Image (cartoon, rainbow, N blue to C red; front, side, top):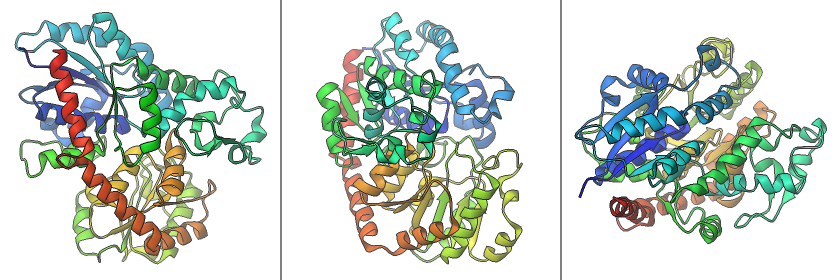
Length: 479
């Protein structure tokens, strides 16, 4: 019998690439032949940041690249993420189809037996169906966000979205309007559903695209989620009532580390991912010199942008907290400002020089897993949230885009591991929330308990471990 061959097609953003690559490497570890599809642009960037060997592939694991359909001017646009999603959904189908046909005709390469896209790539499911190839999809966000996004169409039908007028964005309407009918979810404010409800335009691209993509996931033969059953039990029960073939395999970084502990055949960096930014590992040496639980780690992910004023408020808030801190500041964190760190107030840099470490990008899973880290100031992207839960690190939350509001809601109100900042950044609140997260016994106890449950899920015999094995068996049986 030929080896099963999965073609993994991630949305070309960091939040999708890394969990997709972790999953691909886990499947490869269990004998599945993998083709991992990058964009040509990301492929070049990864060669520059990680080295050519990271994307060269090896026996049974190959990388392919296709154009992303963008011009260079798009990459600096404020709405880059939406332009990228539009380009992939509108222009990738034919190149992907050609790639699948070429792979099936390549000597020494087993026939494609599964197309495995991530969220936001439902066109790949249509291509798979056209070619008669089975499919699975990795929803690279939480189960709660999937359920919430699946209800966007009903929110529109019930008149919740689009908003009636611009005043609804600022008059408290988003927080006062409670949605209490989504299966498996506690009552949730309209504003915490996702950022795409914040529009008065009935044809808003983000709202329309998210609605189509979340419901498009159900066209796949199975749904794969980067979560674990204890963390989202109620939501998963509700989802499985509608879509029984769901595999929870998270936290993926932890599951990967369990499988690849002390292996030396993986050249792609921490937790099996690839970075679109050059990572600074020197910050780990700095953490080694700090006391256990003493460090505040701040990172707003790969897409969040700040104004100069917001950057200054966060900076002075961290300074006023009195705690030493590690802050990852991307070069493009402040648009148009050149290097992100150059936008920091000079007085702040001088005042905190002896108790802070500033870096452009860092190996986050290793940072969060370091014993010196005591809390995480985060945007609540799902990968960051999941990694923080797995590491047992409390969070100070400042969501701003897509599913981050839902993740923040669960971190703060359901799991008891987070404190939410107001939308308007104020240094006093940053300082007080950080101070509370660093010493609050209830939050720290909850974080420690979730860490144990995450470890149990990915350990041999745990639910995520066993679900991965079931996935592999399904891929083999399809073949």
